[in-house]
Length: 175
Ligand SMILES: [Cu+2]
Ligand SMILES: [Zn+2]
Image (cartoon, rainbow, N blue to C red; front, side, top):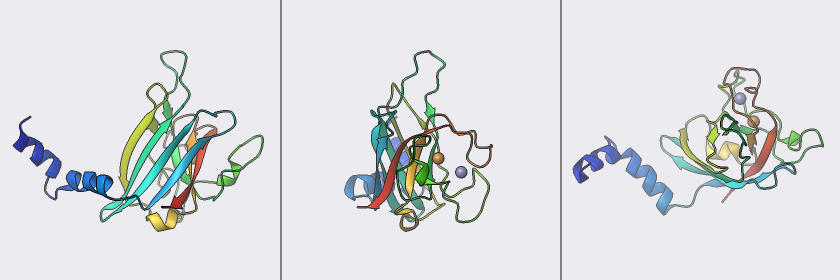
């Protein structure tokens, strides 16, 4: 690809991709969540950062230490949601029970909850992704929690996509 073609791809009509790249490189995020695994998943750590953008909230996720399956068709896809609770505490049965249910201010079915996010895909235990969402503002998710699950989200089953156990959690905090 020559330089002109590349510029037209990254700049598009509104310079959208360049604008987002510049936002990431030159500004601190508006909020972040420090992700930690549960007692059963002590190797998981990572961060989720939130940038306010006119078109929505840009959510960047980087996580390491996710379980690595020991057979080729094992699961490497992990559901991720913003849950409405404000604490990564819980009980023996559910280590992050206090994160509560999916953030759902408009009383919608799953996966139209404001807190429903794309899943992360692990690559030998590490995952990175970025998504732009207009489902919530940064301000309204401060003090809520990001949860990563053991399995993927089927985007159908109520109330939470049959995503399995909560394996990692972080409280969303202002920077
Ligand atoms: Cu969840
Ligand atoms: Zn949901």
